[in-house]
Amino acid sequence: MTGPLVPLHDDPLVADLARLGTGYDDVPAYPADSIAVLARAGLLRRFAPVAAAGEAFADADARHRAMFDALRRVGRGDLSVGRLFEGHVNALALFDWYATPDQNAWLADALDRDAVFGVWATEPAPGVALVEDAAGRRLHGAKSFASGAGGIAYAVITVRPATGDRRLAIVAADDATRTDASGWRVRGMRASMSGLYDLTGYPIDDRALLGAPGDYDREPRFTSGAWRFTAVQLGGIEALLAETRAMLSDKARSDPLTRAAFGHAIVATRTGWLWVREAAIRAAREDCDAASFARMTRGVVERAGLDAMEYATRLIGTRSAFAGQRVDKIIRDLSLYLRQAGPDQVRDAAVRDWIDRDCWGDDPLW
Image (cartoon, rainbow, N blue to C red; front, top):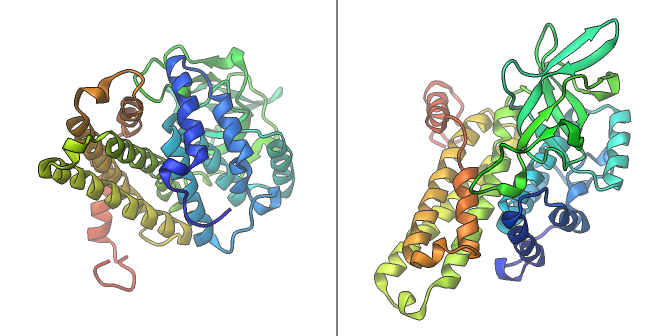
């Protein structure tokens, strides 16, 4: 299951996800058929803890390099499915770091049923509280932008106890009565179904609590983990570059100005690839600058995506905006997926770290 990626035009998984993605884009719904493609490819279980029958990689570097390729590959096929897959991989990482043996045994059984997991942290004020009284523990509040709500089987969520740091809880995520996706009316990423999920009254016992208070926010894992969603975004950018190339006419290919513009798109995409791969490696090693590198990578990938979209529309012209064109869907999906909160503030935080911290590795510059 290791080795180089199959060329984009020859990858059956990418082709299947792209084909199915058109239907879910036309009629937004949880992409069950696309998730089944991931299950058949072994991707739902591959990055689970070894204790839950996940693949035994040689080391953390090998695991992250394989994850880098898998996330890009799914993103190449469909960014909405890539968003769900990234959440699943994120949840498996949290199990790997913090689960008890009993929780890993439960996870293994859930993965035997091809269960999909997510990680939900965003919430409307005042957030999700962990309430404890004579009646026992239960939750109060809701999660917003809950990708896959009502479709995925389980979510690892952040909850706030009465005292102390926030912690993680495992909840069922497929309850239709708790799901409200009516507000997810968007131009792109439609099949991610990132709706509202009401957890009020949901019972919580010790088996549902994952790790200790503060574990979710542990650095550099918390911030450096952003490399995973940039890998999915990169996959979409790579797919856009490939589609742009395929749509160039013979006349366009013979035009030096067209070639110059396409060259800029290549440089943007390749630059994103280099940064995301490096961010993955540094996250695996939990380097002292892993968090800063991931912060900077977010901005690099955003810029690469914006450049690739601009050049695609300029090179392809009006055809890039026609309904049913794969280029149009990729651009709409990327336009939304690249929108992360506070990009300039995130970049500034990375720069401040690199200025103020003595964390440059063996090379005094890099």
